[in-house]
Image 1 (cartoon, rainbow, N blue to C red):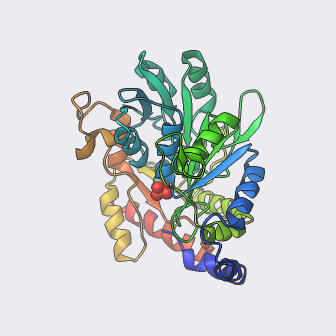
Image 2: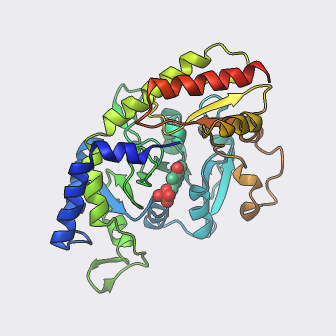
Amino acid sequence: MVDLIGQYQKIQSEIDKAVLDVMHSAAFINGPDVKGFQAELEKYLGAKHVIPCANGTDALQIAMMALDFQPGDEVITADFTYVATTEVIALLKLKPVLVDVNPETFTIDPKAIEAAITPKTKAIVPVHLFGQCADMDAIMDIAQRHHLYVLEDTAQAIGANYKLKSGEIKKAGTIGTVGCTSFFPSKNLGCYGDGGALYTNDDQLAKKIRMIANHGQSVQYYHDEIGVNSRLDSIQAAILRIKLRHLDEYAAARQYVADYYDKAFANHPKIVTPVRFPSSDHVFHQYTLVLKGADRNKLREYLAELEIPAMIYYPVPLHLQKAYRDPRYKEGSFPVTEWLCANVISLPIHTEMTDEVLKLITSKVLEFMKHN
Ligand SMILES: *Cc1c(COP(=O)(O)O)cnc(C)c1O
């Protein structure tokens, strides 16, 4: 699904030097590369504050801790996504309120958000799924009317531009109260281990986030809040500084792959290609098809025999996961998510794909569809 070795080889001399420099300096924790990366990411995003942390899941948890949510507070998020968002809500003893998604863009449905709001609602967590922003104009409008925080989960959409209805262009994760991202190796901006960050334009909130990520202290050994230990290693920061310079070129490579797939599958009666939401760039963390009247599991098996990987993101809706069973939800509660979970399939997409490989994959998918 990804080619991290091929990507590394192209920047190997730069990366190797940066990693060795950290080793020679022994500044493993909070070294100059962490501050350097922070400043460079702030500049790239146009965000006032970037706070690096240990991973994307921590970023979400720290954001919710910094906003002082209390047990029982309700947080609205999408049913069709990776588990991390709902997991941290539940871990903090908040109440996850799941809602359905838009069948075309796969992102949280603003109408469903509005219908789920109660006096206990504190926040909305849109997930910019597969590389494309949720409908942030509608979400910010709802949040303003109901005085809610917006935590953008931008783990899959770092670098995507969003054009607000005011005409202003902002980066994914810098529109709401706080943005949370991940530098997991396979993410669009991936390090060589775990990493994450929060972004915000709010000075007070940034200060609190920094404090919580550092054991609740702003002065060493004086703990004003219960915090966590969540840091980005200097080695990872050094790698990310180099890869950040390539991020736009990586997005363009992914978009090239997506365009190739789009063309190959255009107008196919059984294949729905990803819909581009007009307000958002799509940085294609995943390229996800919906099959209509063909079995995506069989397609996956067929491709696997040819050593072509394909993945199902995500096979089970959150409301039907064992750990998150809740009397409020049953089968049929979120029909769009349930339908997507049964019919989506993601094809390989990364920065190192050649036309030759794309031709092979598309021809094999089309060959399968001819007989199914
Ligand atoms: C990857 C991911 C996360 C979690 O990131 P980690 O760094 O693995 O903790 C959260 N949300 C979404 C949507 C993700 O894709």
